[in-house]
Image: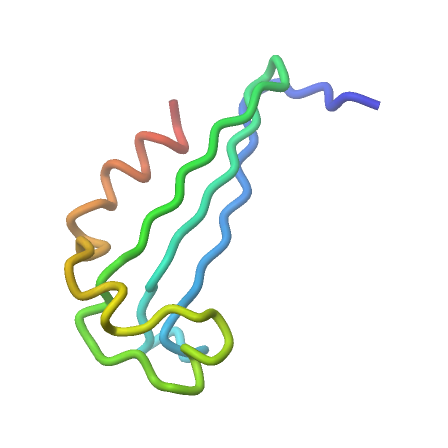
Length: 87
């Protein structure tokens, strides 16, 4: 049964340095956006959290400090992500 969407719908998945909202940071964001006509767009970005990724977190999501060392910060891609979601 196809969805009857009135506007686009976005599903967002985050990988982070931990579970504390006050101190931990995003290391990856993945978004699946479904348009009203049912077409899908996907955006995935590694994010430099500007802090070390704990080994326990890397063991869960597989993302290491080396993988994000040249990635942009969340602040530098926040507008791009917002535009992807709202367009």
